[in-house]
Amino acid sequence: MSTSSTPGWVWGLLVAAVVGVSSAGALFQHVDAVPPLLRASWRLQLTAIVLLPFFLYQLSTITPEVATRFRTRRTWVLLSASGIALAAHFGAWVASLDQTTLTHSLLFVTAHPLVIVIGMAMLASSVGAVRSPRRNEAFGALICFIGAAITLLDTGSQQGDQTVTVLGDLLAFGGAVFVVGYIVVGRILRTWLPIFLYAYPVTLIAALLLLPLSYALEPTFAEFGVLGWTDTEFFVWFLLLALVAGLLGHTGLNTCLRYISPLVVSVSVTLEPVLGSIIGWLFFDSGVPGRWTWLGGMVLMAGLLTVVVAGEQASQEANNQNEPA
Image 1 (cartoon, rainbow, N blue to C red):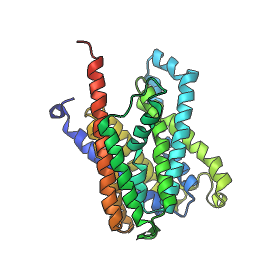
Image 2: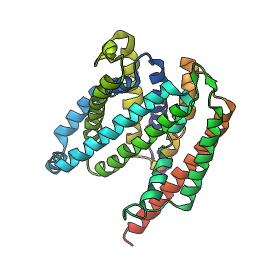
Image 3: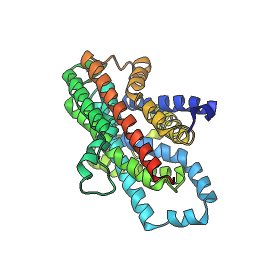
Image 4: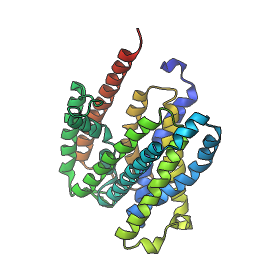
Protein backbone atom coordinates (compact mmCIF):
# COMPACT_ATOMS: atom_id res chain seq x y z
CA MET A 1 0.00 0.00 0.00
CA SER A 2 1.86 3.09 -1.25
CA THR A 3 1.66 6.25 0.83
CA SER A 4 2.18 8.34 -2.33
CA SER A 5 -1.17 7.14 -3.71
CA THR A 6 -3.03 7.79 -0.46
CA PRO A 7 -5.62 10.61 -0.76
CA GLY A 8 -4.66 13.69 1.24
CA TRP A 9 -7.90 13.68 3.21
CA VAL A 10 -6.99 10.29 4.71
CA TRP A 11 -4.01 11.81 6.54
CA GLY A 12 -6.24 14.56 7.89
CA LEU A 13 -8.76 11.94 9.01
CA LEU A 14 -5.99 9.92 10.70
CA VAL A 15 -4.88 12.95 12.73
CA ALA A 16 -8.48 13.79 13.67
CA ALA A 17 -9.24 10.16 14.56
CA VAL A 18 -6.19 9.80 16.82
CA VAL A 19 -7.05 13.07 18.58
CA GLY A 20 -10.66 11.90 18.87
CA VAL A 21 -9.70 8.58 20.45
CA SER A 22 -7.25 10.37 22.75
CA SER A 23 -9.93 12.73 24.08
CA ALA A 24 -12.02 9.97 25.67
CA GLY A 25 -10.05 9.62 28.91
CA ALA A 26 -10.21 13.31 29.77
CA LEU A 27 -13.92 13.47 28.92
CA PHE A 28 -14.71 10.42 31.06
CA GLN A 29 -12.73 11.83 33.97
CA HIS A 30 -14.53 15.17 33.69
CA VAL A 31 -17.92 13.55 34.46
CA ASP A 32 -16.66 11.52 37.43
CA ALA A 33 -19.76 12.33 39.51
CA VAL A 34 -21.41 9.44 37.63
CA PRO A 35 -20.28 5.96 38.79
CA PRO A 36 -17.86 4.33 36.32
CA LEU A 37 -19.88 1.35 35.09
CA LEU A 38 -22.91 3.54 34.45
CA ARG A 39 -20.68 6.14 32.79
CA ALA A 40 -19.34 3.46 30.47
CA SER A 41 -22.86 2.25 29.66
CA TRP A 42 -24.06 5.77 28.87
CA ARG A 43 -21.17 6.30 26.47
CA LEU A 44 -21.92 3.03 24.70
CA GLN A 45 -25.69 3.68 24.64
CA LEU A 46 -25.22 6.99 22.88
CA THR A 47 -22.61 5.53 20.55
CA ALA A 48 -25.07 2.76 19.60
CA ILE A 49 -27.71 5.40 18.79
CA VAL A 50 -25.21 7.24 16.58
CA LEU A 51 -24.25 3.99 14.82
CA LEU A 52 -27.85 2.81 14.25
CA PRO A 53 -28.53 4.67 10.94
CA PHE A 54 -25.26 3.37 9.48
CA PHE A 55 -26.12 -0.15 10.66
CA LEU A 56 -29.56 -0.01 9.03
CA TYR A 57 -28.09 1.31 5.78
CA GLN A 58 -25.47 -1.44 5.56
CA LEU A 59 -28.05 -4.06 6.54
CA SER A 60 -30.18 -2.99 3.58
CA THR A 61 -27.30 -3.12 1.09
CA ILE A 62 -25.49 -6.38 1.93
CA THR A 63 -25.53 -9.37 -0.39
CA PRO A 64 -27.78 -12.36 0.37
CA GLU A 65 -24.68 -14.42 1.20
CA VAL A 66 -23.51 -11.92 3.83
CA ALA A 67 -27.06 -11.62 5.21
CA THR A 68 -27.24 -15.39 5.65
CA ARG A 69 -23.87 -15.52 7.44
CA PHE A 70 -24.88 -12.55 9.60
CA ARG A 71 -27.90 -14.46 10.92
CA THR A 72 -26.01 -17.62 11.85
CA ARG A 73 -25.60 -18.77 15.44
CA ARG A 74 -21.80 -18.73 15.15
CA THR A 75 -21.80 -15.07 14.12
CA TRP A 76 -23.99 -14.03 17.03
CA VAL A 77 -21.97 -16.07 19.51
CA LEU A 78 -18.88 -14.19 18.33
CA LEU A 79 -20.69 -10.83 18.41
CA SER A 80 -21.88 -11.56 21.95
CA ALA A 81 -18.37 -12.55 23.04
CA SER A 82 -17.03 -9.33 21.58
CA GLY A 83 -19.75 -7.34 23.37
CA ILE A 84 -18.81 -8.97 26.69
CA ALA A 85 -15.15 -8.12 26.08
CA LEU A 86 -16.01 -4.53 25.15
CA ALA A 87 -18.16 -4.11 28.27
CA ALA A 88 -15.35 -5.46 30.46
CA HIS A 89 -12.85 -3.18 28.72
CA PHE A 90 -14.87 -0.02 29.24
CA GLY A 91 -15.93 -0.98 32.75
CA ALA A 92 -12.36 -1.62 33.89
CA TRP A 93 -10.89 1.37 32.09
CA VAL A 94 -13.45 3.95 33.24
CA ALA A 95 -13.13 2.61 36.79
CA SER A 96 -9.36 3.11 36.52
CA LEU A 97 -9.87 6.79 35.72
CA ASP A 98 -11.40 7.21 39.19
CA GLN A 99 -8.52 5.36 40.87
CA THR A 100 -5.36 6.68 39.19
CA THR A 101 -4.17 9.61 37.10
CA LEU A 102 -5.21 10.24 33.51
CA THR A 103 -1.72 9.63 32.14
CA HIS A 104 -1.24 6.36 34.03
CA SER A 105 -4.66 5.12 32.95
CA LEU A 106 -3.93 5.88 29.30
CA LEU A 107 -0.46 4.33 29.42
CA PHE A 108 -1.73 1.03 30.79
CA VAL A 109 -5.00 0.75 28.84
CA THR A 110 -3.16 1.21 25.52
CA ALA A 111 -0.77 -1.65 26.37
CA HIS A 112 -2.84 -4.26 24.52
CA PRO A 113 0.04 -5.04 22.08
CA LEU A 114 1.93 -6.26 25.15
CA VAL A 115 -1.07 -8.40 26.15
CA ILE A 116 -1.14 -9.95 22.68
CA VAL A 117 2.56 -10.88 22.89
CA ILE A 118 2.03 -12.44 26.34
CA GLY A 119 -0.95 -14.38 25.00
CA MET A 120 1.06 -15.61 22.02
CA ALA A 121 3.84 -16.83 24.32
CA MET A 122 1.34 -18.68 26.51
CA LEU A 123 -0.71 -20.26 23.70
CA ALA A 124 1.81 -20.94 20.93
CA SER A 125 2.75 -24.40 22.19
CA SER A 126 -0.85 -25.60 22.56
CA VAL A 127 -2.77 -23.74 19.83
CA GLY A 128 -1.54 -24.46 16.33
CA ALA A 129 -2.93 -21.25 14.81
CA VAL A 130 -0.98 -19.06 17.25
CA ARG A 131 2.67 -18.36 16.41
CA SER A 132 5.43 -17.76 18.93
CA PRO A 133 6.51 -14.13 19.48
CA ARG A 134 9.42 -12.99 17.33
CA ARG A 135 12.62 -11.92 19.04
CA ASN A 136 11.89 -8.21 18.56
CA GLU A 137 8.36 -8.66 19.93
CA ALA A 138 9.76 -10.34 23.05
CA PHE A 139 12.38 -7.59 23.36
CA GLY A 140 9.67 -4.94 23.05
CA ALA A 141 7.61 -6.70 25.71
CA LEU A 142 10.61 -6.65 28.06
CA ILE A 143 11.01 -2.91 27.46
CA CYS A 144 7.29 -2.48 28.26
CA PHE A 145 7.68 -4.25 31.61
CA ILE A 146 10.66 -2.05 32.49
CA GLY A 147 8.73 1.10 31.55
CA ALA A 148 5.68 0.02 33.55
CA ALA A 149 7.86 -0.66 36.60
CA ILE A 150 9.44 2.79 36.34
CA THR A 151 6.04 4.53 36.14
CA LEU A 152 4.98 2.76 39.35
CA LEU A 153 7.74 4.62 41.20
CA ASP A 154 5.31 7.56 41.05
CA THR A 155 2.73 5.63 43.12
CA GLY A 156 1.19 8.04 45.63
CA SER A 157 2.11 11.17 43.66
CA GLN A 158 -0.51 13.69 42.55
CA GLN A 159 -1.49 14.74 39.03
CA GLY A 160 -4.17 17.38 39.29
CA ASP A 161 -6.90 16.01 41.57
CA GLN A 162 -5.88 12.38 40.99
CA THR A 163 -3.32 10.15 42.73
CA VAL A 164 -1.30 7.37 41.12
CA THR A 165 -2.36 4.01 42.60
CA VAL A 166 -1.43 0.42 41.79
CA LEU A 167 -5.13 -0.54 41.84
CA GLY A 168 -5.99 2.08 39.24
CA ASP A 169 -3.10 1.04 37.02
CA LEU A 170 -4.14 -2.62 37.30
CA LEU A 171 -7.72 -1.74 36.33
CA ALA A 172 -6.43 0.12 33.28
CA PHE A 173 -4.23 -2.82 32.31
CA GLY A 174 -7.28 -5.05 32.79
CA GLY A 175 -9.00 -2.84 30.22
CA ALA A 176 -6.12 -3.60 27.84
CA VAL A 177 -6.50 -7.33 28.48
CA PHE A 178 -10.24 -7.29 27.78
CA VAL A 179 -10.01 -5.20 24.62
CA VAL A 180 -7.88 -7.93 23.05
CA GLY A 181 -11.02 -10.11 22.94
CA TYR A 182 -12.82 -7.36 21.03
CA ILE A 183 -9.87 -7.04 18.63
CA VAL A 184 -9.54 -10.79 18.03
CA VAL A 185 -13.25 -11.28 17.29
CA GLY A 186 -13.15 -8.21 15.06
CA ARG A 187 -10.32 -9.71 13.02
CA ILE A 188 -12.35 -12.90 12.55
CA LEU A 189 -15.64 -11.26 11.56
CA ARG A 190 -14.39 -8.19 9.72
CA THR A 191 -12.94 -10.35 6.94
CA TRP A 192 -16.49 -10.51 5.55
CA LEU A 193 -18.75 -8.41 7.80
CA PRO A 194 -19.15 -4.66 7.08
CA ILE A 195 -17.94 -2.34 9.85
CA PHE A 196 -21.30 -1.11 11.17
CA LEU A 197 -22.84 -4.60 11.15
CA TYR A 198 -20.04 -5.48 13.54
CA ALA A 199 -19.76 -2.27 15.58
CA TYR A 200 -23.45 -1.62 16.29
CA PRO A 201 -24.49 -5.01 17.79
CA VAL A 202 -21.28 -5.25 19.81
CA THR A 203 -21.66 -1.71 21.17
CA LEU A 204 -25.33 -2.26 22.05
CA ILE A 205 -24.60 -5.58 23.78
CA ALA A 206 -21.83 -3.97 25.83
CA ALA A 207 -24.05 -1.02 26.82
CA LEU A 208 -26.84 -3.32 27.99
CA LEU A 209 -24.51 -5.65 29.91
CA LEU A 210 -23.08 -2.79 31.95
CA LEU A 211 -26.50 -1.68 33.24
CA PRO A 212 -27.26 -4.64 35.57
CA LEU A 213 -23.64 -4.59 36.74
CA SER A 214 -23.95 -0.92 37.62
CA TYR A 215 -27.28 -1.53 39.36
CA ALA A 216 -25.78 -4.35 41.45
CA LEU A 217 -22.42 -2.77 42.26
CA GLU A 218 -22.89 1.01 42.30
CA PRO A 219 -25.03 2.44 45.13
CA THR A 220 -25.71 5.73 43.33
CA PHE A 221 -27.17 4.04 40.23
CA ALA A 222 -30.74 5.11 41.10
CA GLU A 223 -29.63 8.72 41.52
CA PHE A 224 -28.66 8.94 37.84
CA GLY A 225 -30.77 6.26 36.11
CA VAL A 226 -30.48 4.21 32.95
CA LEU A 227 -30.81 7.19 30.58
CA GLY A 228 -29.20 9.84 32.75
CA TRP A 229 -27.07 10.99 29.84
CA THR A 230 -30.17 12.80 28.52
CA ASP A 231 -29.88 15.27 31.43
CA THR A 232 -28.58 18.64 30.24
CA GLU A 233 -25.75 18.45 32.79
CA PHE A 234 -24.28 15.40 31.03
CA PHE A 235 -25.65 15.33 27.49
CA VAL A 236 -22.98 17.45 25.79
CA TRP A 237 -20.10 15.48 27.35
CA PHE A 238 -21.50 12.09 26.40
CA LEU A 239 -22.41 13.32 22.93
CA LEU A 240 -18.76 14.34 22.53
CA LEU A 241 -17.70 10.88 23.71
CA ALA A 242 -20.01 9.25 21.17
CA LEU A 243 -19.27 11.53 18.20
CA VAL A 244 -15.63 12.53 18.73
CA ALA A 245 -14.12 9.53 20.53
CA GLY A 246 -16.52 6.95 19.08
CA LEU A 247 -17.61 7.85 15.54
CA LEU A 248 -14.71 10.12 14.50
CA GLY A 249 -12.10 8.24 16.51
CA HIS A 250 -12.76 4.53 16.15
CA THR A 251 -14.71 4.61 12.88
CA GLY A 252 -12.19 7.07 11.45
CA LEU A 253 -9.31 4.71 12.24
CA ASN A 254 -11.16 1.81 10.61
CA THR A 255 -11.70 3.96 7.51
CA CYS A 256 -8.01 4.87 7.38
CA LEU A 257 -7.12 1.16 7.37
CA ARG A 258 -8.67 0.93 3.89
CA TYR A 259 -6.09 3.35 2.49
CA ILE A 260 -2.90 3.19 4.59
CA SER A 261 -0.79 0.52 6.25
CA PRO A 262 -2.05 -0.95 9.54
CA LEU A 263 1.45 -0.22 10.87
CA VAL A 264 0.99 3.53 10.32
CA VAL A 265 -2.38 3.45 12.09
CA SER A 266 -1.07 1.33 14.98
CA VAL A 267 1.98 3.53 15.51
CA SER A 268 -0.24 6.64 15.44
CA VAL A 269 -2.54 5.18 18.10
CA THR A 270 0.40 4.63 20.47
CA LEU A 271 0.47 8.43 20.83
CA GLU A 272 -2.84 8.30 22.73
CA PRO A 273 -1.28 8.64 26.23
CA VAL A 274 0.64 11.76 25.14
CA LEU A 275 -2.24 13.41 23.29
CA GLY A 276 -4.79 12.42 25.93
CA SER A 277 -2.64 13.89 28.70
CA ILE A 278 -2.23 17.13 26.74
CA ILE A 279 -6.00 17.35 26.15
CA GLY A 280 -6.62 16.77 29.86
CA TRP A 281 -4.06 19.40 30.86
CA LEU A 282 -5.27 22.02 28.35
CA PHE A 283 -9.03 21.69 28.78
CA PHE A 284 -9.69 19.98 32.11
CA ASP A 285 -6.76 20.99 34.34
CA SER A 286 -5.73 17.37 34.90
CA GLY A 287 -2.22 18.37 35.92
CA VAL A 288 1.29 17.37 34.83
CA PRO A 289 2.64 13.82 35.34
CA GLY A 290 5.48 13.12 37.78
CA ARG A 291 9.06 12.59 36.61
CA TRP A 292 8.91 8.78 36.91
CA THR A 293 5.74 8.75 34.82
CA TRP A 294 7.47 10.82 32.15
CA LEU A 295 10.50 8.51 32.08
CA GLY A 296 8.64 5.21 32.46
CA GLY A 297 5.94 6.30 30.03
CA MET A 298 8.49 7.01 27.30
CA VAL A 299 10.14 3.63 27.90
CA LEU A 300 6.75 1.86 27.89
CA MET A 301 5.70 3.59 24.67
CA ALA A 302 9.05 2.70 23.07
CA GLY A 303 8.42 -0.93 23.99
CA LEU A 304 4.91 -0.82 22.53
CA LEU A 305 6.24 0.70 19.31
CA THR A 306 8.83 -2.08 19.09
CA VAL A 307 6.10 -4.70 19.56
CA VAL A 308 3.79 -3.07 16.99
CA VAL A 309 6.49 -2.72 14.33
CA ALA A 310 7.81 -6.27 14.88
CA GLY A 311 4.29 -7.69 14.79
CA GLU A 312 3.47 -5.91 11.54
CA GLN A 313 6.72 -7.13 9.99
CA ALA A 314 5.88 -10.71 11.02
CA SER A 315 2.39 -10.38 9.51
CA GLN A 316 3.83 -8.98 6.27
CA GLU A 317 6.33 -11.85 6.02
CA ALA A 318 3.54 -14.38 6.58
CA ASN A 319 1.42 -12.74 3.87
CA ASN A 320 4.33 -12.79 1.43
CA GLN A 321 4.91 -16.49 2.09
CA ASN A 322 1.24 -17.25 1.46
CA GLU A 323 1.16 -15.40 -1.86
CA PRO A 324 1.51 -17.60 -4.96
CA ALA A 325 4.86 -17.39 -6.71
